[in-house]
Length: 123
Image 1 (cartoon, rainbow, N blue to C red):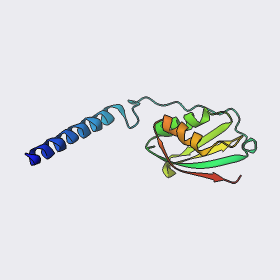
Image 2 (cartoon, helix red, strand yellow):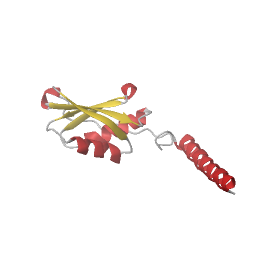
Image 3 (tube, rainbow, N blue to C red):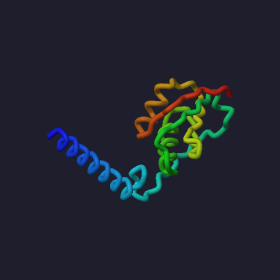
Image 4 (cartoon, rainbow, N blue to C red):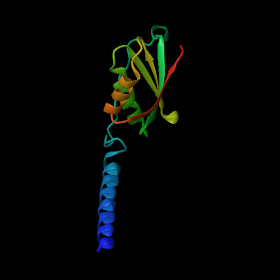
């Protein structure tokens, strides 16, 4: 009886996994279904106006749309200019005023990604 229950649970887990994978195949890696996520441009691109910088290691970015989503969510913060390096799975965040590590993490998490590490850099 116990073996039957374990097998039933494994079957249910496999069905859920297959459905999830099929959904990902149908809608793209980040649910955009072939739609391109438009990058939001930062008006102030003068690096000297951003005395603070951080590098965030991000988990879950696998395509250009993911990178644009992460950049866009950070660029919506006041006084921030973010740029993603998809190959390194990281984002460089320039800030006019220092922003707390937790706020950066929460912003990225709200976009659907996970910050693995935050490193504040000297400018």
